[in-house]
Amino acid sequence: QVQLVESGGGLVQAGGSLRLSCAASGRFFRISVMDWYRQAPGKQRELVADITYGGSTNYADSVKGRFTISRDNAKNTVYLQMNSLKPEDTAVYYCRVEATLAPGRSTYQYWGQGTQVTVSS
Image 1: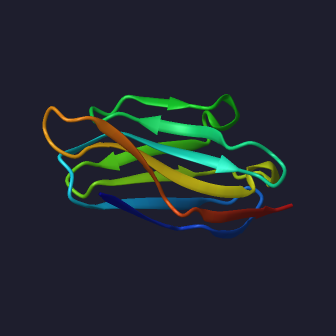
Image 2: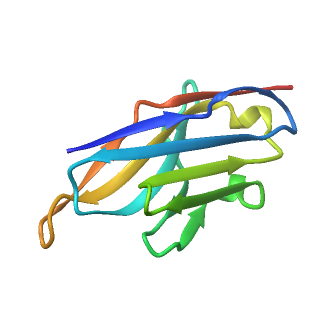
Image 3: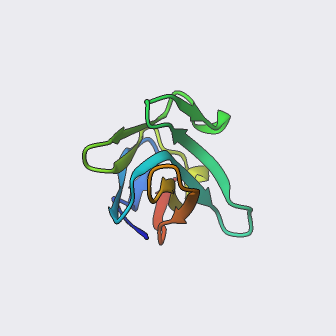
């Protein structure tokens, strides 16, 4: 199983920055994809950014140029650096990973508990 612990959320003024972290622990062989999703009140959960084991990244159009996703494979940790934050970035941010528990076995997804990010105008 894989446990995810998120940190770094909080309250920030528009134009400010925050850095989210998500550390994975447990018994697994490899974590392939690591994602950040977010869900604002009354809206569906949406993909913010993802990163592969090799470091290839993908971003939602709404955060391109402002957010940067990165990972430390040795620490099984993914980060989301959020700059130039806007009130519309306010949401609960969730970490998601795809993990293989043993070589040649199936891949499963795991979700973090979420961390609140609030951007005031």
